[in-house]
Amino acid sequence: MVSRKMVLNDNKVSPKDIPMICQKVVVSIRREKIKPAINVSLDSTPLDILHSSWKFINAFYTYSKFQSYFQLTDWGIDRLERALTQTHESSTKSTGDGSKQDLSHFIIQVVSPLLEPHERNQIQAQNYEHYLFQLFPGYGDSMDSLSISDKISLLKDIADVNIERMSSYFSKVKHIHKANNWRVQPLGSDYDGWVYWYFGDTRLYREIPLSTIKKEQDIMSMDDFTFQLVCSTIEEWSDLINKFQHAKGNQKELGRNLVEIGSSVILKLRAEETSRLKYEAKIRRMKELELLPKKKSRRLEIKFDEQARRKEMEKAKHQEMEKAKYQEMEEARHKEMEQVQRQIMELEVDSQQHSKYKNRREEDLDRVKERMQQGVDDYFDKKMDSDPDVDCLHLQWLQVIPSMSSPPAEIVKKLQEWISLVGNVNVIQKDSQLLFNINEEGFNHILFKNTIRVYLELCMHIFISQFVYNQLSDIHERWIVGSYDNIETFCSDLMALVRDNYHEHKDILSLLLSIFQP
Image 1 (cartoon, rainbow, N blue to C red):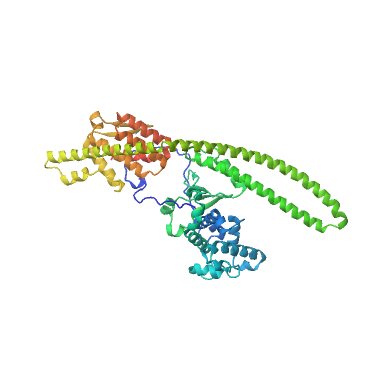
Image 2 (cartoon, rainbow, N blue to C red; image 1 turned 90 degrees about the vertical axis):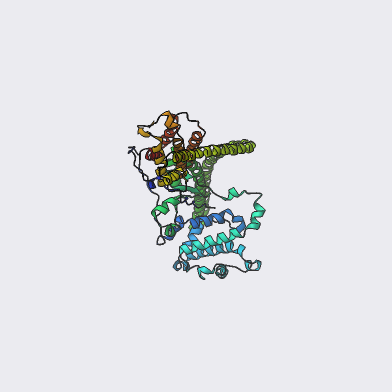
């Protein structure tokens, strides 16, 4: 199914929400990001609404994935869109009649599994609306009276109810298909944040990040329109491949997926185009023969046949070349999949041992963190016992280890006060280096150790990129277990992460500077 974007945790806020006073960092930016936006509303054209509605894409993917269950054949998304976009006025025309019959046939096929056995034998194009609106009374009593958005919602509701009642079908096919085979995953995100989706046909969509919608628009009014059709023709796919075939950095994996999929889709579209042109040429030839006098028709028919044979030979040669190219790509993909499968099998062999090791490792880290937290408790207990004039309430507040559920600004404030108790500690950024002014006693101070630990945990909580999280997690673990003998090694690892993509990761550095340069 089409996966809806997960809403970000309320506690995971942008670093921009944290009041910081730090040195300005001047960087050169290759280009300014363009905020993803979908300029579609209920007043847009029906086709624009269909192209942008996640409900429609979700519903069609359900029907397409389970076409054997719904007994649907030769139903592409283009055909369903044509059936849905026919207005009530055009339904009296010949083209409208065909599309209207298409829509009634489609509705009958997807509604029939929800009917009683005797009703399935009775439903037909003339009375399908009676059965349809008995099941879904909230939509009125006529398909012609529904807006395009209501038709989309109706198709989505039909799909959802079918999924709820497909338990017997799932039990029959679960030994053939795994659950993951019924789900589709995004291909990746581009530089501007668009998330790209391919559902197995000839179309490529991209989705606006849900976080962008929440920040820039009203989620209640724009939630239906989160997709944008990117490619559906040979020219559009070719342009996309040219754009992404040399993608680098965070877009490299996305580019590889788009080039691989786009090449296969172009071959498919060319085959369909060749078949269509062949059929049209045949129809054209038949019409021409019908208009010719009988005496000339045989001679011209022979001539046309000869021309057709030559064209067939040329097309066959071209198709063989395309087929060879496609087979070469498939063999390469097959070899890659075999290699992946071997790697998976190798990982599965020692998965239990790895899991035990991971659990032990996490337990060891938890024990070390507990000792570090106990060190903070002991430090402030001793401070309150040794000086009766101190503000005990304030020290008790400082004694509590910050929780990641607290506002980031409050966490930063507490870390700033911890550092003020350590002594003369400051940090500056010079070119591509991070320089700490701290002696050995300060480096080993329990508050300094915990300040860096909590800072890293706050970064892991705020910056949700999986790559950033994994890198920070490694640095966090090494800091806790004491792998860093000096502050210079820690700074080197942190700056290596920031330099990897300075534009994306500079807020990690800004957060650190705000703690040590209040």
